[in-house]
Structures are given as C-alpha cells and as structure tokens.
Image (cartoon, rainbow, N blue to C red; front, side, top):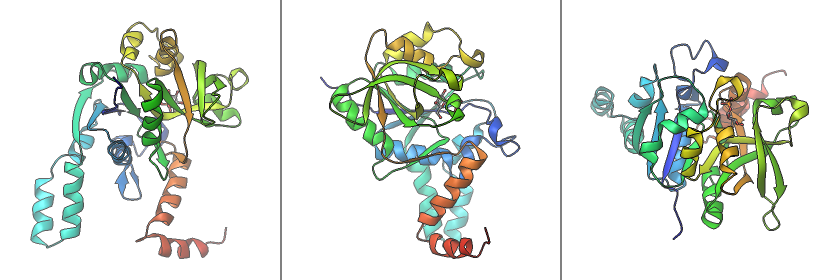
Length: 291
Ligand code: G1P
C-alpha cells in the first residue's frame, strides 16, 4: 500500500547567530517577514500540502513559538471589545491552524540530532522536514510539489536548487544523475555537507525541504558526528543511500534564505510588493528612492 506524508517536522532549536542581535532574545523562527513570523509561512505550506500534524523541535528560549500558535486570551478579549473583527479572525486563525506537538532538543547538536528528537512523534511513517528560515514562494507550495513526486517514488526526496560560486559551501551538495523521465528529478549517488567550493561534487545544493522515510531514524542513531562537530542530516541521508534510493527535486519557485540578513531584506521587498494591501503604495515609495 502506498504511504502518505501526514506529518511535518520543523527543526527550530538553532541559535540564529546569523541574525544577531535581533535573535539574542527572539527565536529566529519568530522574525517577521512583512507581518508573519517565518515559522508560520512554513506551517501554512505544510498544511496546504496536506500535512495533518506539525511537530516543532524547540530548545531553550523558544517559548514565543508555542505562544504564537496558542490562544491569546487577553488579546482576543481586547479585540472583541474594540470590535476589531478582522484582526480577531486573523488572531484566532493562527491558534487554530494546526495540530502542533513540541519536543525539545536539549543540546544544539545539529540538524540530524534535531530530527532524531522527533522519532517517537513521527513513528514508522514517511514525514516532511521544513527548515523555517528557507522561505519558498511558489504557485504550488514546494512541499506539495515534493509530495506529488513522493506519491510516485515512495522514496526520500530532497529539495534542490543550483547555487553558483563559492556560496555552495554553505549547503549540503548532491552528487547525482539525471532521471530519464522527469527533468526536475535527479537520483542521488552521494551527498556532502558544506564542502569546500573546489570539492563540491555539483552545483545542486540542498534547500530546506525534505521528505524522508522513517528508516532515517535508525541510520541517524548510527551516524558519526560530522561537519562542525554536529550530527548532520546530510550524513544521515548519505547512510540511508545504503538501503534505499534518494532523489533530489528541482522545485518550481523562488527560495529566500530569510535566516540571513540580506536574504530577509530581499524577501521583505518581494513579499511586500506582492501584497494587495501594501504593494501599490510600497512600489510608489521605492520609485522615489534614488538608487
Ligand atoms: C542546513 C543543512 C544543509 C542545507 C541547508 C539549506 O544547513 O545542513 O545541508 O543545504 O540547511 O538551507 P544550515 O543552513 O542549517 O547551516
């Protein structure tokens, strides 16, 4: 019987050092892109793709994430009293959008370790992983595109994008071969986390969307610490290749690295311009700047 992807996992225990000082006391997942915290974009994407359960791996100082998706009693009362029905509806929608379970990652030991923390909550079924600072604007949500492929392959799938230049060494990189039928699909031969630019096996970088089969948990349990002394998800997936096929998928859409200051600025401009309520005025404002 074909397996379905019902659960989406969000690693959110990282320290967000690339965005200091904003992330000194605020979780990076709570940084606002226009008017929504980054993690909400990811949760909305997972729900749009048909996921029924959200699992967020948090750590110390991440309470704001739980508060955000919880009912805000005082705020709701205030908005009700003031007759702000639109804002009230928006606030309620956030607290009712998903079934969310939280699990703590007590030590910052890497993305693979964060995924392993959710083993009991995921159980024996395929699941999605969304890295909340990778924001992807797409007509069909990126995760939905990947789930459609998974429904055919029933194999693990990693979102991938071509990255030129030395910044390839900020990513996991695929060594892969083209699929005979689907031009967006590649079969992964092996993969390497954050290679030196001259050692990158290709330009195909891993972007923060994964669909993984549950065997990844056993493999991660037996994976040695890798780059940066952390348990890398990339190394776990490399181990998975000894048992199963893994594919890379070139998604349709634009990805923003919103965990990075410049990436966040680009996303802010483009997302604002696309908004009906802000776009027209913002466009006029931008035109007045002498650049
Ligand atoms: C993580 C992964 C890396 C992937 C990247 C995508 O790295 O370890 O393989 O390419 O996300 O954003 P990080 O950005 O957490 O250093």
